[in-house]
Image: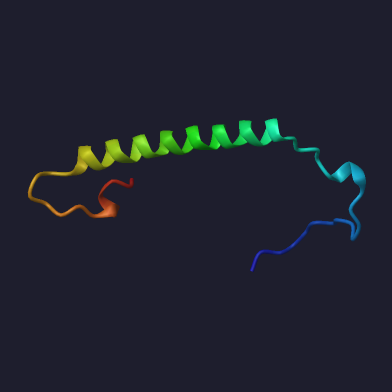
Length: 64
């Protein structure tokens, strides 16, 4: 078990709440989708590079 050393308060102040607008949500969504596309491209490349015709693909083969 990981020890909990956080010394937080039992109350939430107005300054603790970040104002998150629709534009912020759109930007965060777009950034996460681009990041996911990057990871997908790298994973597809690793799979294609490690796969040989006639051989079953195993997830562990492309992870280093």
